[in-house]
Length: 293
Image (cartoon, rainbow, N blue to C red; front, side, top):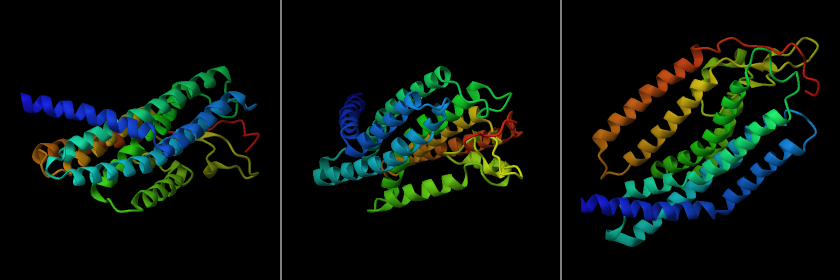
């Protein structure tokens, strides 16, 4: 009982410390400031429907930059543990404490998300943006996945990389690769690339160039896939990343953690397939061409 209490107490102390470290990191504040700028533009920009720009803001500024922030915090935590020697806190406890710090980007992303939803209704989108038959909830689900979940997933990926590839420069390379793959899997090729839903950052509605008319006009359209199930898929992938990060500790209960990880892999695969084939499998095209594309 006393060991459990001590471990819980230590985790709480370390979690508060890592939250403060994340909250005071300059790169986080840069990303938060850029995200705030996107929020302001939703209401200040003359173009109705500007809330659609929300998705890329938190995804890049809180998610991708968050990967770099968390990678650095994890390496700093490991150096401190090495300096402490035999009295160092177990790695799994430090990993969980670092994971608690995602409350910082999560909170910032949620504030931006709520603002984006308000902006969506206060300044309704142009008639050429959302195809007929597509609900506002469809759009909000995409916004939540690309904004809030990506803002959390980026730091968790940074934590995972720091556990298994703690070399200088890994975070920068991973960030570039993440953005490049995302560009390729945003739904602009191959009829919307239904398999893209297995990626962690994609689109379900947008200015997709693969459907341009012969006269060059662009119509907003949906890409195949169910954004509601996709959000659940992302949550499972985030949980899987955390479990695998904890699994790195040789003193952890690896047998149990491997079973949990395999279960999450199976659940993620099921949700990914359901995202492709349940509900929104058809491409819906807005018959009104985009007037500013």
